[in-house]
Image (tube, rainbow, N blue to C red; front, top):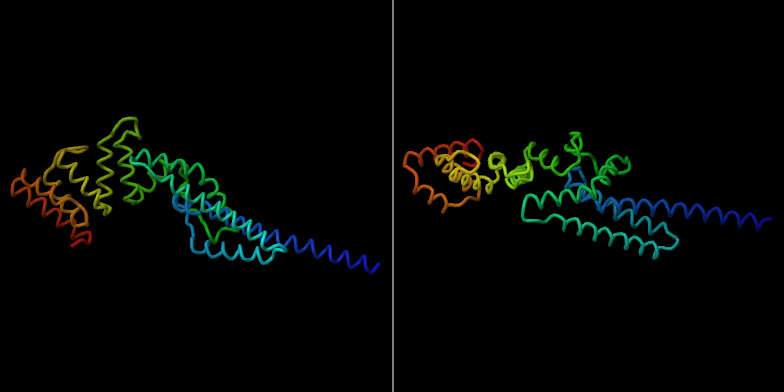
Length: 266
């Protein structure tokens, strides 16, 4: 009878230990699974605490191995899952490619299709509140589409997304045919938001009358703004001034000086 009781106690202890190992291992797996999409979640506008995640991922893996009755086997399983994590992160990073705004939008659509549902699920999971929360885009209630994401960020001050949106209008991705007017509007907004490249493009548009009425004074102003921002094309400015009167050049210089002073560049 005594032997039977001892055997039963050992069996019960074994079940408890196995349950504890499973809990530790399952948590480590969940954290690693989140790690496979964390970079994409951040890219898609979720608030992701990357440093906290990395630290906890290491702690969870170590705890799972320490709690295991077969630490080497558990360590090998976790290693394999970390390799899957690295492969998936690299693959999704590779999706962010393309030479046109349309290519960029297609890449974003692919990432959204693959990662957004998982990101949203983790953001709702109370266990993952320390690592991920909904960002402004998710809180806005707008549809989770790549185009809505671009528009939301452009409308809320992101020069980078303003440039993307400009490209989408210019390439005819939005509306089915090239829309130079809206392309110009959003490129100009990006310049006003401080993007030197966008300011230079806006200068060229004013000089050529592309998407906006031709205006050499505005072209002068925007060339000088772009150069002061750290970009721009001094040679293009010099060529432009060959076609201008002294009064036009002076007006463009004055307008540029005023804007640059008001926005902290002088």
